[in-house]
Amino acid sequence: MKRLKIVFSTIILATLILGLFFRAGGTDKKYESTEFLFDTYCTITAYSKNAETAVSAAFDEIARIHRLTNFFDENSDISRINKAKANEPIKVDPIVIEILETALEMDRESEGAFDVTLAPVSMLWKFDEGEPVPPTAEQIKTALAIVENGGIEVDAESLTVTKLSDETKLDLGGIAKGYAGDAAAKVLREMGAKAAIVDLGGNISCIGENPNSKDGKWRIGLQKPFAPTGEYSETVEINEASVVTSGTYQRYFEYGGEQYHHIIDPSTGQPSRHEFDSVTVVGGSSMQADCLATAVYVLGREKGAALAGKYGVDIYFN
Image: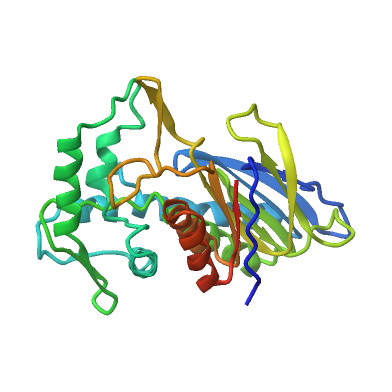
């Protein structure tokens, strides 16, 4: 098991990757492309003989996962589940089953700190609106009751998902992008990429050894919270791994002189409050790291470190 690493500082993971420039050699080549998926700019850089084909295939897989899990697409599997009645089994893609099984495991292990059924509460905060206003205590109380009285059942054999309440709604925003990172990395490896980086808006997966580094390590810049892009305070050096962060700087609004961010504590329905600004997780699975980054932030230092220890990942409190 990897050692648990806790770093206390005032920094936040940036999406900047240091050492992305590959040396050309033999018939191998570097290819980089960017597409807009999961409501963010996604960049894949690969180094192989058929780098362009591999990157294209990886993006096709990411797009497929996005279509299945998109909360706002009425034709997605998640939207079909959300529109279903209680006790109505909904047939879904195996990808959705795999994601939900992991989500339910993380819900149990984190004692509810990670909950994909929290949508009725998180929707109240309206972070995507121009001038959001904090919901009332009564609205939060009502939404929390929906979450408490709801839930889902996942049947991997029949590939169905069944809601336990009409009002239950799922949002895979805290896990689907991580799954897509793992899936893209798998495609790149299968197509012969010797080295690559999948950057899905800050969910970063590094594959192979960095050919521009003598020690083969990848170096990921950490940016100061709420500072202009490019204002870094340190660099994390990793081998082949995934790096994911959850931070208050990513989505927030100010109202009445107070700041409200998007990392909601399922126990209160309010933004989780701690003395740190973000949690960064470094581990072998992007999906696992995606879930843990949220769960650890909600749990705080002591309980969050204990949860991270169960999964053998490195964590950074910033």
